[in-house]
Image (cartoon, rainbow, N blue to C red; front, top):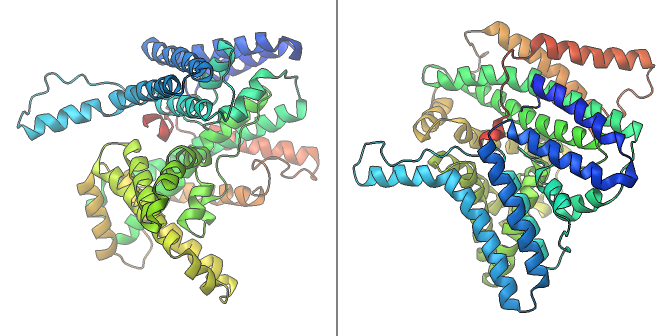
Length: 478
């Protein structure tokens, strides 16, 4: 069930109405409704996948209790590593098993397709696995107490707004909200609806239309000049940001309708003045997860080797982030690019601070922001290309055939229309950049008729320029 589908447009009001029939004193019933709704939401994809989700909830719920009640440290460690191993094992099997089998068959010269299982990746598996892993690790560190109510834990893992592609809320942030009573707050509900509207606009109007242009450029990259290729990867960066942040906006807004507060997941990432700054602004819950549960432990463990150890931790973390996106050379290079640049920034941070102290603001902010964005685009080439050969050809042609002229594509009307919509979108994003979400408080001092006209315009543009087919969100395949 996609957020941008008719099914969800019918599903959400029904669940919302049932949920708020029961007031705060019946929080158990509210949580039961959320859990049932979340499993129904997931059942829409495939009941086998729901069985994996339910099994994952039961496994980690029991493991959390066993870890916290273990009197012998060895027993605690066994339960911790058993839960971690099973979670990672399921993820590895579904994401990488077929790749490993194909690789082995090619290594031994077997071109047949026999004995390959063709696992379909259960949608959302990575994201609820990350939630489970964080919970198990935090319980084992005694950072949080284990959840003793299976329904509460089920809501934490499977809450439908964030189930398929995040944000990855931590147990210490989410479980207290699940346990406490919730009463309807009109202002929060209105704020949530505004964020849902803006998320839908990002996805349906900006991301999906940019996708048509980016797909055209990457498909015909071998025939296009460098200026058009640069335009294509810029458009793809807009598509990717609007798609992922659009999903986050819808998820956060939907959660707010039910009385839950999620953390902000994007914070103007293309205004970043460094890669370090970028990863603090881009997909914040995702980058925070890897920082807290991989980079920080590796840094602590390898810091005895000084800066070399920390650089090794950074490189390994971002190589794994690349491989998490897919077991291909493209994603490996994508992760390596980010790891190398972040390592450089770490090693030169003190030097750069001393230099920047004497530079005017133009060289402190605008130049670093532009350079950071251009380097990010290089990574997106490898991220978007179908394989390494296409990425390498795209990269080479970008620099060897570049001409200072306006890019030319087959459907220039689509380009013009999308460019106009993007400028409108950029104006609204910039106007609401200081708000908790873009539309929250935007034009609050204007007459109500103006605000409602503005919201109606967004709805009109969605209806006018949305793709008639339901286009899945980019991160569903990860």
